[in-house]
Length: 288
Image (spheres, rainbow, N blue to C red):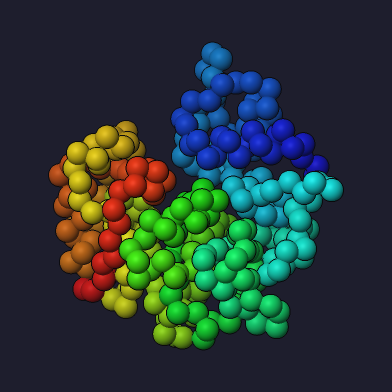
């Protein structure tokens, strides 16, 4: 299927902005029609969080590359796959769901091909078997694809000792389902694994399900005044199910402490808002 650049850009903007109401213009309407999501209300289209995920998943599958990191080649309509460390399969459609997306200001170790150099300014998408796990030292798994676009800013926001990490996008579709296996590979090779997810009940819930006592996670230094200025209260109320589920579990001390802070102050803060507002970040162990 061929997608126009204007339609791709419209879909990307919809997902990046993550608004529940968007203008019902031609491009937005066509993007939502293709994915069969959204509800028209007057001159607007109403979207849920699951609708946004479906848009990202659909366009990423058609493009053969993550929609949020897709870049138009100047010579043709396919993504430029001549860069080091990017599989040629990523331009064939639908394969990205079986690839791992990584970025960082350190070399990304690969087998049977040159490493992705630390000087690179792009997000690399490679097959799981291409990763040279024993040569990794530290990885940080992130929740939102938009942060991969701004990976340099994200890395520099981390505590000094974690700025030499490789960011790994948790992915969507099949590669999200393989995330547990990926984490196990890192664990078996003594790689330090950290998580950076949204500071809300859903984010904590995902970290708790994926992590073990060996792992770390990134959390904001508590600043209630800043938190309230960037909080998405409506998102918090939509996550009460995850909140109650976490409260009933035997979770790590660190998760329990932050769950209490989040519940007491009804917080739901995205990674992007933490980075954009230069909120100091800290690393904590997920010890039981």
